[in-house]
Length: 361
Image (cartoon, rainbow, N blue to C red; front, side, top):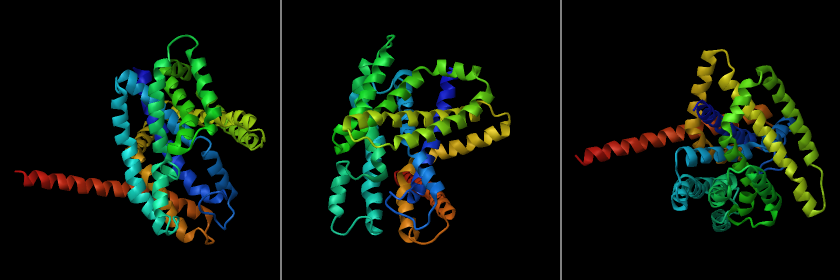
């Protein structure tokens, strides 16, 4: 029971951190030279941060989803049929995907000039078939993963070698993902499924994992985190090697899975330290309150933040503005505005509900 409670709290932390890393990645991508907007200011440190964050933030969110899926299926006994799963995930993922995409993201991009005049209908069509979904691609991809994994799950057995076999299957899927169509993000679904499965196995093995964590000295964990960061940075450099042969190139791309898993591991270790090794109860309480608050709004922060960054950058990206000021401005707006919009929406809904009750008396 304690292991379940610990991992659920840690997963909430990982989800919040993952969303914040997505926001940070988008706030700093302007300095990578390969994003929608480019800055005239050279800021290699922010380019490095963006490149590093991009190696594991989405895999970590998929990993967390896999863990929560296991909890819902095995502990809560949810999703007893494919129909129930599809219905639940359609409401939670596809409805926000369509609503935010069609009535928020695309209109903003059109108004600020990211979508050229005369191409609006093409942009909408591409969005609906998963070819140009912007930051919302994750929702469609995750919906696909839930369906794929549900269909595959009956083959996941508790036999001795099942984990090895399943890892081999999902590794092969990752290697071959580039050969699948990008329609409805099928290729990315195949690619990221390995992280969903590993999250699934992580929750299934939670008792063993936390037993080992408890027996590990705090100092060792503290030392291990920077070592893992250094290793992942070195592997990122290695991953830049170009291989002409397409098959060998896909096999070599498995290094990105290793980098992502290292990033997930170091983040998990940091979260474990925060939740289990902090001596100051007051500090622990304050961190918990902050995380619970952000967790409450994390999904809406994800949904709404990128177009807000685009609005800011459409006006000042080309200007000679201090990189730290620009990154902080984008980050603060990306967090604060979605929270305020969510609160405003809740007030309107609550007021309408009150008015409806009064009218029916």
